[in-house]
Length: 212
Image: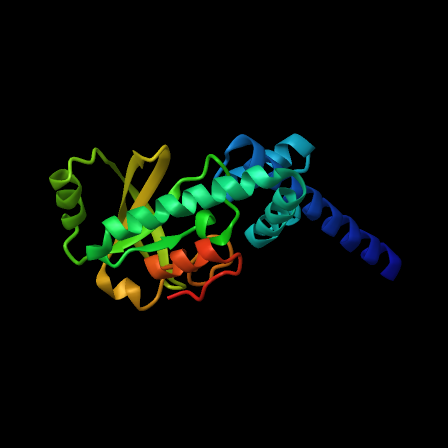
């Protein structure tokens, strides 16, 4: 009986690992950005329908890093540097809103399809829209729900625009969100964030900067 349980557990871990790597491959090669969508599509492709076998987002992220290390090559590093330079320009442009870089461009898992994700802070929800209009930047707004902490969600505006051949997503948050970032969809911990100064440091060094 103990051997059967061990075998069952081992098979479950193997299925979860296979799904994590397939989901990571789909994200890296097909431009899928959503972890949930990637794991569901991976399960469908592999014919695995056991909910307990679905990998956690953090397992998919680890598999994605491994996939990029093995297959992406120098082109990935060049793309990431270009995205981070674009992020720095945007952070400087949006400096009045205490902007921060978040997401795959910061943590290094971005691919050529990944948007540059920024968070800006202002208690006037219309201030960012006025700023874009004053500078002649055509931007589209959409709603997104973020988990601010383990017991609280918030519906926020996300402005999307293109510049420097990159897509930018700018999430508008109140100033009090500077004290603690929203929770990451990957590991349920506060998102890693970086200011313009920290992104400059990141461009100069492969080591990740401290976060605010």
